[in-house]
Amino acid sequence: MDKKSDNFLNKPIVSEAISVLMSIGSPIILIFILVVCCQPDPTKKAAKDMEAKQLALVERSRNNVALMLKDPASAKFRNSYFSLALIGGKEIPVTCGEVNAKNSFGAYTGYERFIAPATGISYLESQISNFDTLWKKMCY
Image (cartoon, rainbow, N blue to C red; front, side, top):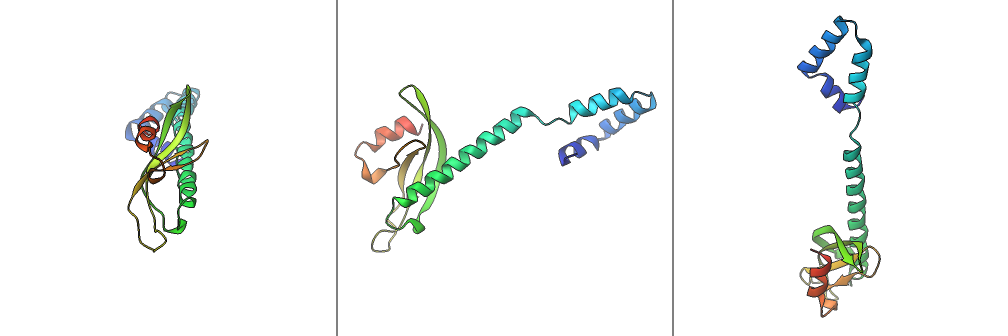
């Protein structure tokens, strides 16, 4: 059994209930209770899987954004997060955040926002004139 199951079984009230059931000769009921109580919650597993996919997308997007920069190895990210943008009636997974990197002179340029849709080209704030419009549409 996993640690959560062990913790559950070690609670005084559970231990007492197990003792009572065993004393009245109800091992089938006891087995049923243990099976029902110790099953993993499928909604928690689905949520963990979704979160893992979102984190993987954020990491992949950061790598793609870094490759757009003059010095990809110097990229520093902050405030990066997963979002779902509604585009053309479809939800598109997007990573939004800020990046700072060194320029040709070796100096950091300051943080700027980026948008990195999972299905397309990443955008840096300094490269697009209507970036605020895109940000409001894709990152909120």
